Structure formats: structure tokens, C-alpha cells
Image 1: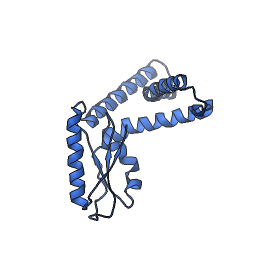
Image 2: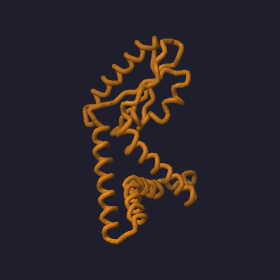
Image 3: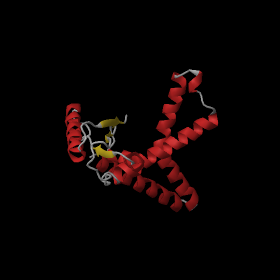
Image 4: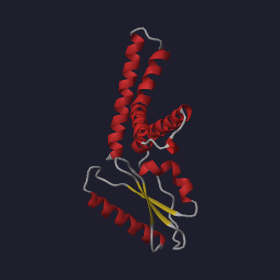
Length: 179
């Protein structure tokens, strides 16, 4: 459900910025300038809200330990903007059905269930799952429906834990949650 909504949003954004770029080219802009503006708009969709959060955090948290210099702050912001674009425009919409690592029936091997955060899906774990799987049994879960009652999510997690224990022989599961 999250993936479907994000796919629709990413296609709509893509069509809108492409249409804008084509309109600007027909209006006399150079192709490079028109497509640079379109790219800046896509980046802005992700970067502007993060910049607002960064500024709000700087105003609210006045402790000296939280201070970064301007260049370091811009680097952190840019890294977060790139990651957010990747997670919300590529991973979650288009890669939510990725195959998980094969589970090994070995009760001594740690069994780990990765649980995504609100308005996310299991694909948010995809970039890290190969590294996390080394020596572990790793599984993910999709908490759906997106705006469902939290009790249903608990049932979903419980069922995933039971499946992971049954498949691996583990007596307990490590839960890793995001957000």
C-alpha cells in the first residue's frame, strides 16, 4: 500500500517536472537550464522540509555539543536529502518486493526481524540487509494497512516472529525497529 502510493507520487512528480522542463524549453530556456531547474525542484521536494527541520533543531537545541559548522551542516543536510530521495523515490516505491536472504535452520544463529517505521515499508531495509544478514537469519515485515490500528501491527509482528522462529528453529527473535 505504501509502495503503491509512493509509485504514484514518484510518477506524478516525474511527469510534472518533465512537463515543466519541456514547457521552459519551448519558452526559450536552454535544455540544460530547464532540466537543471526540474532536478532542483525534485531535490527541493525532499531537501526543503529537511532544511526546515535542521533549522528548527538548531533553534530548539542550544547545547554546544549539537553545533556543527556551516559546511559540515550543509554536508549532513545534503547526505540526508540524497538518502531521503533514494528511500522515498526509489527503494520503497519500486523495490518493496525484494527477496530476503534465505533463512538457515540453525537455533544458534541469531534471528532478527526488521520492522520499518511509520509511512514506510520493508524496502527501507534493502540497502543494509546484505550486511546485516552475515551470520544472522534476517526477516522483514510490512505493517499494513498504512493508517490501520496499531493493534493490527502488533498481530503482524507476532505472526512474523512465529514464522521466523518456525523457519530457523530459534527460540527468540531480536526485534530491530526504525522510527
